[in-house]
Length: 98
Figure 1 (tube, rainbow, N blue to C red):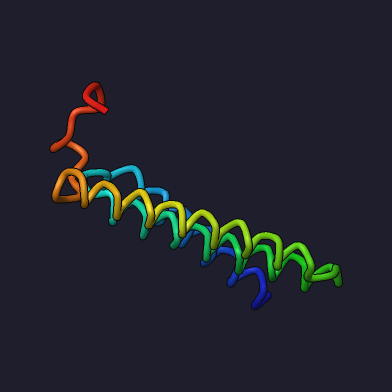
Figure 2: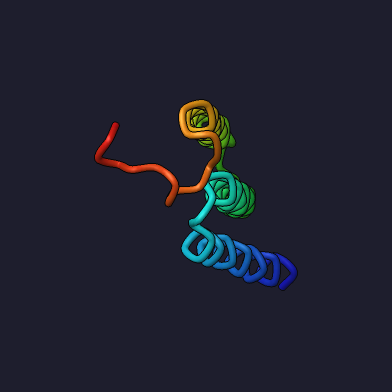
């Protein structure tokens, strides 16, 4: 019963992360933080799933590697955007200008 309650909380956390991702898309930093929030909730949900069915945790290491690569790519895009345009607003730069 306790694991079922934890899974419900994790699904609610995931849904809150998706809502923040869809509503707060003015700044790139807010969207990156909400993506990391979603990744962490998915990581914990996969961990509980694998623990319940006695599977190996090698998939979690692969998942963590991809999430770290995603975070590093997002931070590099954020740094390059701040260097070229001065801020992280999506509305402040023109996509057609390159």
